[in-house]
Length: 238
Image 1 (tube, rainbow, N blue to C red):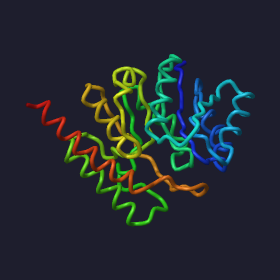
Image 2 (cartoon, rainbow, N blue to C red):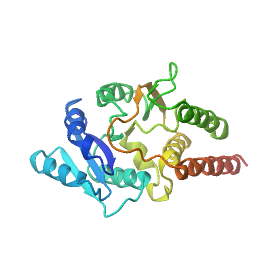
Image 3 (cartoon, rainbow, N blue to C red):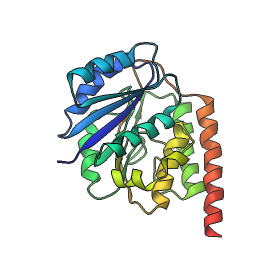
């Protein structure tokens, strides 16, 4: 039975985390959860600690302050590498990613090295987003494919399953981005390393509890990351 770690970064997700973790754990044998909590003032870390004390499949990595999504995932990936896991998921804590999709990802991961949950495969599969945000996300993905050649319909999505070999093959200490840019950078580096990428269609539902972490800084970071990757790609061809 493969050993699977689902990495879930949190900041003020007390309203969601107690419901989410049990759902994740029941999706497949061998599943464990690592919550990376950035010192949530609402007590998210304390809730997860209590769950971890009662269930050895639940793990908590606490950080003293809000340090960003990308660094949280990198910390989780390093935890997975030290723990000899076979597959590593990343997913949001707010139920925008449906835990019941985990078996679908695992099935696809038999054939590819990195599985990305796509909101833009087989149509647009996003619920409860304002049109402005949907257009921004959809356009960003078109622009990403144009700038980098990355063969993904949804390069900015944050529901993914990695074979552990992918995380071993990427220099995690070189990752500097957060937000959308982090998702693009990780997929791009995996692709450039020759790992096989695949997508499974998912339905993305905007959160109904807690507060969104989206900001203008995240959008700007992704824009400049694309130019950085394009410049790097041009240098490689030369």
